[in-house]
Length: 265
Image (cartoon, rainbow, N blue to C red):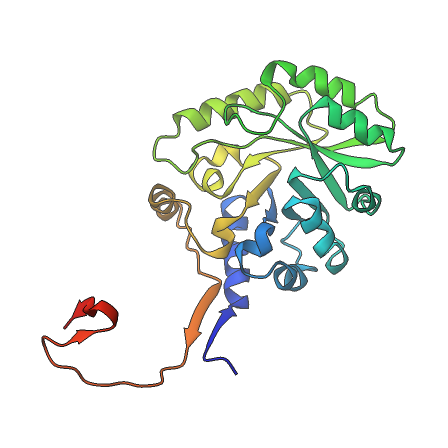
């Protein structure tokens, strides 16, 4: 057995979920399990939560990650960022359990041309200037997508640029834009809140909260941690890194320890 290992605390997983369900009782809780669940093991986390009633679905960054957990749960999976259009074999494996992101009409036309039904998540760029339809193009894009018989909209979402900051002014501006753009699309799931926004800006919680870093018991920033205290939100880390002690010795004041004598007692 290795002298060093990690442990995932299942009680803390359930504790953190309950904390967010209390914080956002009117929103669905979707943990983000991208990047191997932030190093915690995506398959292990998904297996454990596969039948958890407080978990409405899972979120990943790309299609490969979605397919990696697809057979571990019957819950829906949202792909937030991208998929490889050239990987047709992977796209053929997509069914109604997985919804794909779109943020340009060329991708919309491509998916429709495959003569396969797809669920889509429409991303709007409200100020982060990364992926997403431009504000002025959004309504026409949605109207266009709604004409495609092979494509159905599952959700509409955006992403905040600085929701982890103390000052929420820009985040509030993004939320206002998002709310105005989506006020006529209540039939779709609307979501914008990541961990930080869920905590610092409750009005952003929407139909879904996308909880990534904080699901694992970590804080996006000190400002977020302080605001969590005011909401009586207490998170516990899921991961512990442990080792076995192989020697304990007494040292004297002035003794140096380790390479380059970087510590002196």
